[in-house]
Image (cartoon, rainbow over all chains, first blue to last red; front, side, top):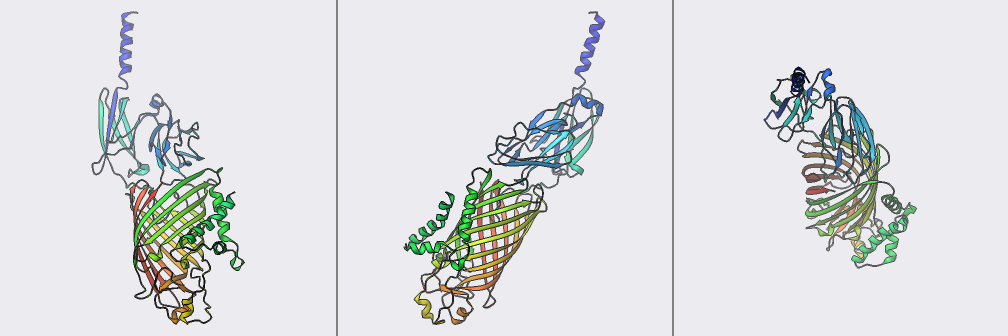
Amino acid sequence: MPNCLRLLLVALLLKGSSAFAQSLEVILTDSAGAVVSDAVIELLLPETQRETFAETGQYAIDQVDKEFVPSITAVVAGSEVSFPNSDAILHHVYSFSPAQTFNIPLYGRGENRDYFQSFTQPGVVEIGCNIHDWMLAYIYVGESQLMATTNAEGVATLPDLPAGEFQLQVWHSQLDAPNNIMLTDVSLVEGESTSVQLALSLQRDRRIRRAPSANRTRYR
Amino acid sequence: MPYTRLSKMPLAWKNLMEARKGRVDHNAAALRLSSCDRKGRLCVSRILTFVLGSIAQIPLLEANESLQLTLSAGSESNVTRGFHDPHILSSGYLEARLQGTKLYRLGLNDSLLVSGSFNTRRYGQTSGFDQTSAGLSAALNHKFGFGAFAPQLNLSIGHSWSEARGEARDHETSSVSLELSKRLSPAWLVYAGVGAEENRADPLQMHHRLAALGYDPAIALPFEIYNFDSQSLSAGVEYTFENGLMLSGQYSRIDGHTISSTAHPDEKIYKVSKAFYLESAFRHDWYAYQLESNTNAFGLAISLPVARDAAVDITANRYDIAAPTSKNYDNSEVAVSITWGF
């Protein structure tokens, strides 16, 4: 191979390997300074770049001891999710969210393992059980796989990102904002790691109470 | 053969209680089994037992099961429902209640709940009022939509058997109720309903102490103080804080009867009573009498979760009992309970 071609090949390889060398670390706290876990961050890409990061997958949200596990799941639009039942009782999974409305009527332990619900539209889908009122889970359907969920320390990291100016979308079920979503601009400099710390204003956690009461006996 | 086994259950229960009291008159026990003998009425007890017991044993329908155990310690200010000293007796008590429920889904928004319960209350200072009861119930529940915020309509029928220390207070209760509830938000729940009860007691025997009172040579008043009907209206509200602490309030209006006790009966009490008998809850010479009454019942409760499926409750109830033909009575009750759900 002529030397000029070798040089060109090496240059191209070097350019390709540094195209997505940027990373973003997001640290979320609330107005009191406490860390915020179970928030989903997503780097919003121009439509022309989304195809590169649109790998879909199959996920599972289990039902264990009358709770959805995990309670927060982030998936790329076009992915599929199953809802296996590990409890020895019947559950009835449903959602009325505009992003995806569906209904999986009564099924018991081990049933519906091969049933997958598709989520094709970006948005947030709220999942409930029609028998056990307190059961609640969320599916965040993103435009691309450049998403992460904050951990117990309130930290989420996105590796292998393109450089440029983007919008960062933050969602949390208690976020005091329209649709529980906040947008902020981020700048990813080529070859550098970026860290962003954001303070969120959270509403009170309003979940339906699960514990029984001596006053009124209801099926639980 | 569910009918044969279940129809013997109330007889077996009664025979056990009779044997405990040292009376083993099986003929009398067999007569007492059937409430359908009196006035040619349908045998509500047998029918309900058969229907409810059969449903609960249907193995082919898949069902969700739950169990709830409640242990309570409380105090009542007027156990005897007396209207002046020395007939107003207060007492502390311990109570245990166990309820099991099977939920059968009939459709997307329709359920049948079959429950069995066992309850026992033991008083400290007025042990004559100790009571043990067992009950069965079935409820049809319809949700007007999906999810926790859909209004729910609940139609329930039930039957229970109560045994007390004295035979005068043994009775069966048949009940029916209709309730509408709606969760307004994760915090607020409201409900309202109507109900009716029929209480029936075993026939009681004439006693010489009744004749000795001399108020009624013909002894025209019935002895069965626990034969009465009542109707009720009730409404309640619950508010749950973000930490799970729940406040609740309930009001009920009950048109029915009350059973009061007195150590000094007089002709005036006898004339306004609907039934009159010996107060078998006490060893000394007390009498029990039934009065028509209207009751305003007020309840407040605080419930604090202590685990995912357990809570501690503090409840306070007040009963203002108005007897049109007599003086008014009142009774207050305070209790601390712990409840586990399984």
